[in-house]
Image (tube, rainbow, N blue to C red; front, top):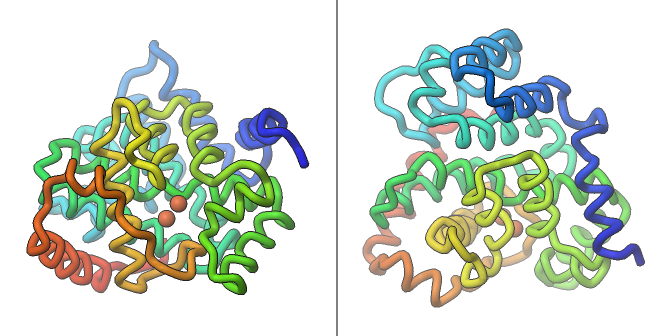
Length: 275
Ligand SMILES: [Fe+2]
Ligand SMILES: [Fe+2]
């Protein structure tokens, strides 16, 4: 078996292989440059019509719930900010790879984005869009593992179904790393905001989060709720129990959760899935 350090190296070099559209890596590099204005970034993204159309479709979808129509990338940027845009771009840019990695993973991801947004609103978290993007990319590591280690990852998916086990545990057994770790390595490598890196890293163990405990708790609950609705498929044969500490941190009542589920059903039923 490869060591975790070897796997980390291979996953971090994913940005260099053609599975990710070069436009994404170019945008991510541009965002990290200090001498570039927000407008220049907006203009650069707007030049790629496929990518900007997807971003606009996404911000205008019920997943984000912005009132009114957002018609330009620059307008979207003003509303959601660069850090969140980075996550959203990644989400929409890996849409095709996601679909190939696991049938239903894209639906699971946008469903988790919708759930995280609704939870954040109910729990009084100010950074609603950040929560939503964290939901969108929380399983980014599944794509990374699926692309780097298709045979091993395929075995995890298959055994989760056949043996009724969590895919997270099988990844650790078979590869020695989980998709949560793999996803956080990529997110860190791509200089995502620290909060997002932590939310990805700890979405299965939110109590281990350091600075982003509430965000990790939100994504953790969103992941469980979207599994409960049966919308999409993230590889697990059943819904995971919600971590007690995360639950307490969010301060939601049973009635709140009922409301969240109703709103979630509403928001995903109105969602056009083809991005
Ligand atoms: Fe996960
Ligand atoms: Fe998930």
